[in-house]
Image 1: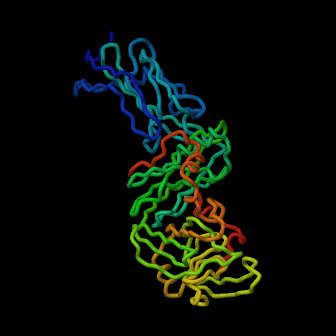
Image 2 (image 1 turned 180 degrees about the horizontal axis):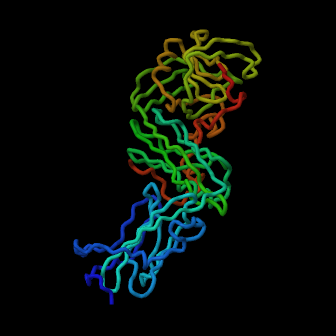
Image 3 (image 1 turned 120 degrees about the vertical axis):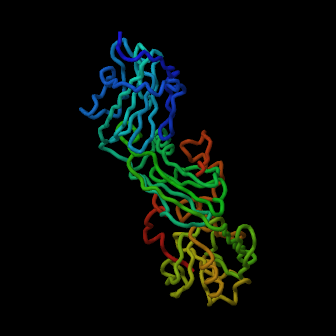
Length: 420
């Protein structure tokens, strides 16, 4: 018979820890335990399959905590990593054993807090510190764009350090890449290829939204030998909803702010053979001066022009820019080599009005449709169902929770050629 105080506590009804990165609470507890009942040190009663402080645990094997002898039982266990994230586990019905139910993360330090009760009802406590071995092969992630202010059309990108094609591995990765927004929106990741993912809402981002992007992949097991690596989080904000709608048929650009028209500008777009692409484009950058030459796009008619107030919408060189040489045609005819030209004053106004991530939409052109991924951000031209089908989690609900490299990396010279 134990000499410890015979104070009876209420047993926990069994431990059910929620998945990684979500807080956990036992559904019972020892709330009836008198404040004077100080827990005893249960070190002599508890053992683990990884000796505390003596060796590192294999992340491929579950962590198991057991109670020795017949004089005590486990009532509660919590296991958290250094950032406070919980790992799931289950307690046996007889209270003799607790074990993790999901793989441990590689290269991670866990604090495991064990609560016990002896045969007389006295509460015991034991804290274990468990470190797991690191992984030889890590998958890192780079989010884009850089933190900052953007337009409502800006997609989020994730660039992986190596290609992943296995559907199950993709599901693990995608589940760990988190996009939180305020206000909350419906959105989804889409796998562009084995190394690149884009995230967009069903519709454009709300005006004046905050978007936080982070990864829970670090240390997470992806395949038998591949584990997740680190990722730098990014935080984006959106401004007003700015949309520029260029009608190539009427030779007019209508600029909307939050759905209301603020300007109508006479323009010229691509002439036959150089027709401007139809569809939704996202502003990629702004350059107050660009030199544009016919050689850059292989045009048969020679030109070498200094161009001012140039707002880029494709990697292949489509801009909205000042074109003082074509003022006589603006509002009446399409005479450019694919860009949208306007007067110098209107181009400067437009340049100062918009930001990276704002929307430029072209309609009624004889040109081809803007592609989704290979010439800038044409993401919004893909129907939502098709976009969702590109997710490894397409059968799950797609929303951000409340709260890859920017613009697909460094393009080669051929994709950076400007055109007028």
